[in-house]
Amino acid sequence: MVVLKSKQNIWLALLLVVLASNYTLYNTGFGTSILPIETNGVVMGSLIDFIVVVPVLFMLYKGKFSFKQAILLAAAGCIAARLIIPMEHLQPYVAVTWAGFAIEGSIILLEIILVATLVRYLPKILGEVRKSSLPDLFSFSKAVEKHAPKHPVIQMICADLLVLYYGFASWKRQERQGLTLHKNSSYIAFQLMIIHGIAIETIGIHWWLHEKSIILSVVLLVFNIYSVIFFLADMQAIRLNPVYVTNDTVYLSLGLMKRTEIRFDHIAEIIEDKEQLKGKLSKDTIDFIARDFGEAYPHFILKMKEPVEVTFMLGIKKRYSHIAIKADQAQEFRQMLVQGMAMSQPD
Image (cartoon, rainbow, N blue to C red; front, side):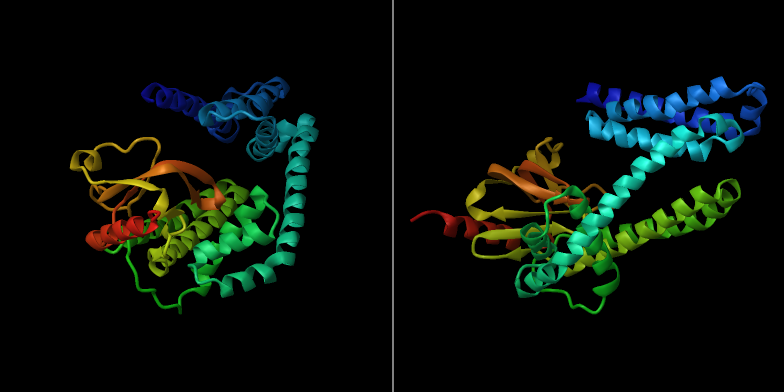
């Protein structure tokens, strides 16, 4: 595991070196001073970096290889080259960069079509959510899976809809009663600190970058605004969605970051050994532990009979065999689990 992480860091370092060296070459006094009069060969080398080398290094860093991802990264590289390399040097190869815009434009068109498809099913989805007694985080995703096409872009759009809902439309809602995961932690304070940092960074870096590149400054501004909305929505989501329990299932969420459904009859064991709880969590363990300024440990770890599916941001899903939980009302939470497991046992 350590060796794998070390290799990933090497690929990331090389990726950053390639990007930084190309930016320095065309956008700093030192870089322009060493450029030859005839720059076609240098620009060709930079295009190879953006279209071939950067995508390969990125895939090596992620450890995932696919033809589709390579095409998308190459298209992004074309656009990056257009933004970083001045037009007076890029002019002989400008047609190459337009290919990147064409590919990305096609993807945007596809996404628009998918959005139109989602809008068509949205009334049914919202009607299903209103009828459901489940928390909105769970009822909305279930309704989307039931009525809308199963496509990654649809999942991402629906995740953004949740961000917009909790960021703007949920402030008049009252908190539900129930077990919680965040009140005895610094989670909310941590989120507010991040928002404060983003606001300061936006004011400072945006104006500095505006003089260097208007496009990059606008992109950064949009990203920072979305980040603030996301963290506000995440605070609302964790506040308004305590642990929800039915006769056979626990609906567990930690804001917009992650959520899962735990069936009582799928729990094999509740691990409460202090050494295991304070040790390093295994790779097949997902933690529902609110962020804190200090070290935070789970109160117990649920060992599952079979891996349980966990949904992350943007609808990304993974499966885990163990679930580490830190609850505000640890004894009540444990009692609820024990009772649920007992009732789920066959007669």
